[in-house]
Image: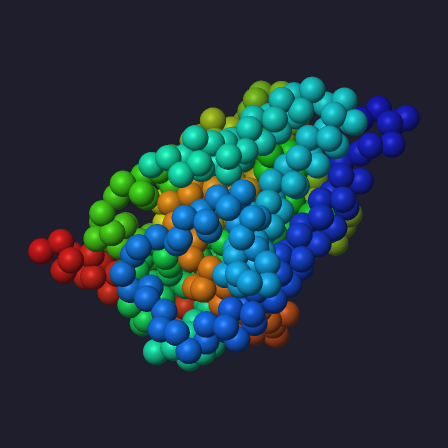
Amino acid sequence: MAAPSNPWTDQRLEVIISVLLRTGVVIAAAVVLLGGICFLSRHGHEQPEYHVFHGAPEIYRSVSGVIHAAGPSNCPAVIQLGLLLLILTPVTRVAFSLVGFALERDRIYVELTSIVLVILIYSLAGPHANGAR
Amino acid sequence: MTNLEFTPLVFGISAVAGCLGALTGLGGGVVVTPALTLLLGVDIRYAIGASLVSVIATSSGAASAYVREGYSNIRIGMFLEIATTLGALLGAFLATRTPTAILSVIFGLVLLHAAWQSSRGRRHDEKSKQPDPLAERFKLNGSYPSAEGPRKYQVDRVKTGFSLMFGAGTLSGLLGIGSGALKVIAMDQAMHVPFKVSTTTSNFMIGVTAAASAGIYLSRGYIEPGLAMPVMLGVLTGSLIGARQLIGAKVRVLRWIFAAVVGVMAIEMILTGVKAKL
């Protein structure tokens, strides 16, 4: 537990986490909606083919691919960018918790939180994320 | 069917799933995948990819409120997330190697459990008998707000809870669901965490668990923007409506309707899997 003189408490961390989660979801949903409107205006009359699995196109499968492709000329990439922002929301929450626990000088929780953060980063940027199958 | 027809349809189905998920506390992900595969013939891999993303949206949105109110225990959450994220990585890797027919059958079995759980309703808290020294070491014991002021609780059977959480994470990564029901069982029944703290902490953990498999789903092409867009926006909208209705709704009637719907879906999913295998 934090010392009385330490302004960093679990309560303060909880408020920051709360704001962070809400902001992340709102921004992500707004970007997805924007991408969606753009997608329907450009590709509205095309036939979707989701009953056979081909996998999303290669550029939509990695963080770097999506960031490069997203723009007014590529609406699905804008949707994908919104979805990435959504996936990053809990990751950012864990990163902030790590900072919070460090400021609380809570060593065990700095270690535990680091493990979770490493697992999350591995999932998003591990060897499988570079197109390797 | 063109995108202009398909997108509103998926949005509508997802909104209903999200609303039911919020009203019953079981989450929208568990309903949206069978609805997409059974009603619209979407490949289960695209469906679980879209569902997983929507799970992150609803759980983060709900967790935002619960954390602030002081119900969620962020230490219990953080500690157990080690188990759920490792499980989620395993589950997501397994998902890419499991034939879709088998995925369908496993999904059906999970739905059967959800139907049973829903018809049974919530259970009452059991009091902790032997506090676990591990709970002390990892500072898991806490307190939550109640009418009579903060109420303290102790946590036990930390190892059992941790193992169950690994299982919950694996299932989450395998099927693209939040597996909130199993997370609540691990905390409420194994670790004797108060029910309200269990459900809100479970919600808090679901987003991080899902994010751990999302990276793998993304790299395998499971997250298809054209499908994930209406699913995510639909489930999110539905769950916001559902959360607002919670106080006025006749929860008992709803639970039975939900159990019946999920039960039918469970049998359909199992039959689909079995037929594909024959």
